[in-house]
Image (cartoon, rainbow, N blue to C red; front, side, top):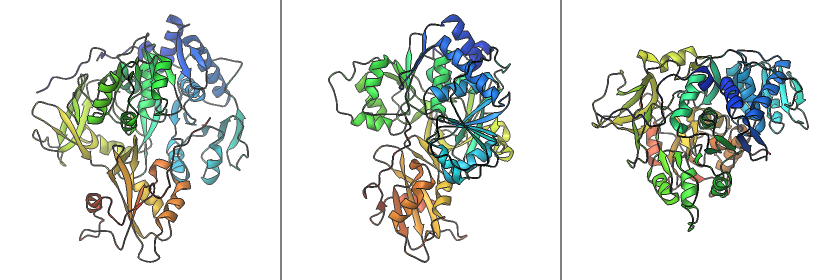
Length: 538
């Protein structure tokens, strides 16, 4: 049986409030390394640790003037940059909860996320505020627009155009501790709409330590994952707690990736996930590929990323994580076992179980369940969903919804997902959410959305649809979906069928559609010239 992974940088003991709770970490850093650089932004802004604390205190005073107090949950809909860092840090400084939203949310997904938070205050970028016109905003009392909103929509909530600069400061952080809620991260639902994962401070500290704890005050981490993604917030937490420099960018760029690394002398990045490795692998080879400052990366382990690491000369660590957990499985540094998630890290227990929670024999595929030695290293709950929380934590173990196998040597290998989700270019997509939108198209009578292999790694979405009446035009269906959902949820493939395959009890057999994959009669959106890109805001 493999021993638990205890990497040199990992300390299984609980951190102090000063070392692990963000407002107190900011106070500590401003005291011990005030003039050292803390943040560099692609806007050109550079903050020292002292300036970071000052801006946090100013923004906290501003938000307090708009009624924010300890325990409040505030929705933040901003791109990566100085404003979202100020809002996040200021909310936590007040003891409030930071709830960032995906920039591509719109329509029913946006409505659902806001409703789940039950927030009365929202902070939004002016380029996004017009999307609020098409949802029920009756729960919101005030919307702070950071900038000028242009043609402001008619809302029932008070709309306030503002900047985050403020003459006053809050000088003492709220008395929050490791077990208090810090943020809400929305993740894909297993059998329905997305859930809000309510995370305590120790949870996010531990994710940052497991993935990025090798950094020190001489390091810089280049972060190009968004702040609504657990990889984005945890890498910021990891860096701030270790007093490393954060070079924050609004998004991933294949063309600029290595220029950014060299420009910032970055020794780490926020992660190479999804299609990032494929894009980096396909970049033209240069004689100086290995001549870069990158030392260590947290990544998803496959043959492609191993070759990328070898080509560019950096080390890596992999494992298993999800928004609800704090990296229960870790590999050794530079593990070359393709598909391995490693073994349970120090302070965590993991099992593979069948449908009745009975442990499986080595080599048998089952669901991964985990629990931790320390309290508060996992999420507190699914926000306002007690039944879903209880279901996930049944029998005292957190049920991941992922299928794995454990070999006799103790190593875990990822196999597939139990939940109805598709992994596309770093995003978990709930097939049920996509299906719900497709059923709104008049000609569609039934639909099944599945994942099929992608040439970029991970999966692409295929929607099998049937009418029972008028003919379905795939292009018209996609054009219908584009304004109603994030770009990454719009299926690439549309397969029009006379009827979907079903069981004797009339349930759609998704596995049949998945196994058949992209058939000759499947329409390819990208081949038809309809390529979609994520939202970018200046």
